[in-house]
Image 1 (tube, rainbow, N blue to C red):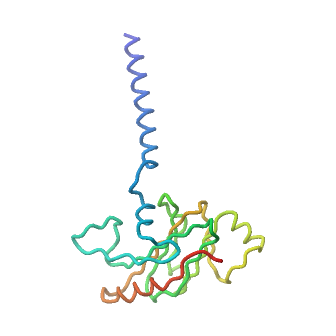
Image 2 (cartoon, rainbow, N blue to C red):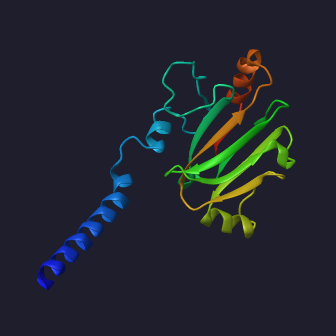
Image 3 (cartoon, rainbow, N blue to C red):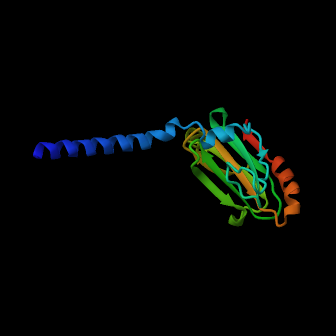
Length: 181
C-alpha cells in the first residue's frame, strides 16, 4: 500500500515537472511569434505603415481599425536607434518592444511631448558612452535604454475621422527611423 502511494506520488511529481518544463520551453520553439511577424514586414531601419484591417478580414496583429499604425525595426548593435518626425495634432502613442514582444518603453503625446517625436533607443553600453559624453546626440532627444539589441517600435495615430486615415498614414511614412551614424 505504501509502495503504491510512493509510486503514485513520484508519478504525479514527475508529471508536474515535465508539464512545467514543456510550458516554459514552448515559446522558444514557436515559429509564429511577434518578432517573425514584424520581420516579415521588412521594416528594418524604415517605417512601414500597416494596412488598416477591414471588417470581416483576418487581423492577425489584432490592430484597431480606427487607428493608423507604423512599425520599425532597429538593431542596436549597428549603433543607437532613432525614431523622429512630426506627427499630426491628434492622439498618438509609441511603444518600443524587445524581440519577445514585451514593451520596454511607452509614451503618448499627452505626456507633454507635443507633435514632435524625437526618441533615441540605446543599449546599455551606448547609454554608458552617452553618460560619459562620448556620444553626440541631438538636444531634446528622449533616451530609452534597451536591455537587448533587437527592438522594434510601434507608432499609433488616432485620426479624429476615418476620412483622415490616408493623411495620417502619410505622416507616419515620413518618420525617420534607423541607426544614428
